[in-house]
Amino acid sequence: MKLMNRFAYLLMTIALCATLYFTLALKPSSFNAFLFLAAWLNTPYVAMGVALFFVQKSELASPYWGALAMLISVGGILFLLDAIYWHPDAQGAIAVMMTPILQGVVGAILAPVVLWLIPDARR
Image: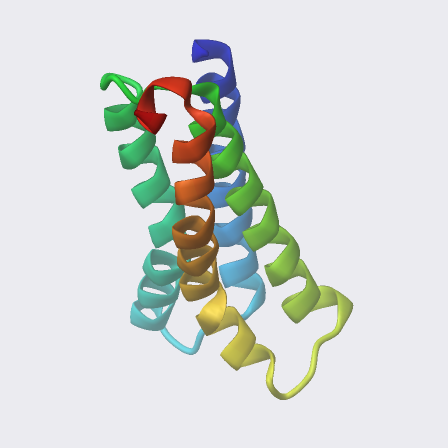
């Protein structure tokens, strides 16, 4: 169980660094714009890291939480890659700003599935 969470933390850290690189690639107009965009795009990774830290100390500890965090991290990076590099267009800025919201929606949809997969939580 702890090995899966370590992989999740590693992947979230890589995703956080990649998101910072993508933020630089967007060429924000000022340092404040960079800070805002970097903070906004990295919010899901920080939130998942904090949530994973607390859930691994509770009775709901399960490797599925780490797998969910990895799935959301990879999905966010692939979405940013698509919006910035693979298919850039005029609406790419909207897609970039929606990325954390979409990651939150995916987490909200899949968290009950993870709870259902944990045997002790089905009581």
